[in-house]
Length: 165
Image (cartoon, rainbow, N blue to C red):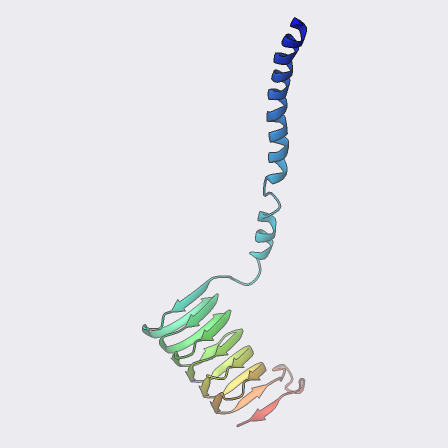
């Protein structure tokens, strides 16, 4: 009978040894090694950083650089970004704009000199000329100026665009 009592401590010791091994095996698959890889893959793409001009702020100057810009307040000056520009409802921008994508929900007084895509939302207003590869205009939006879109600047003959005023 002593052998079962002697076997019990050995079994208990083996169980203790097995528990850490089981835990270390369980911990190994939990490590998030694959998770950082997709984040690193996404990083080389478009810049994720966005600069914001808040609703109660008025700024006069020039915006240049890479990244996205969101204006909810008032800005007077030229904007030249390698990224997206969003003019929020209630915001006002006075100056020329160059950006990849321009979304207007507020008011822009000035020309969009170059853009890949311009989206004029229902609450948006543009007073100025627009030149872009593509254009989306929502019912109820307002615009005063000339528009050129869908043309290839290299030879002027490619695309399905036109001019409107």
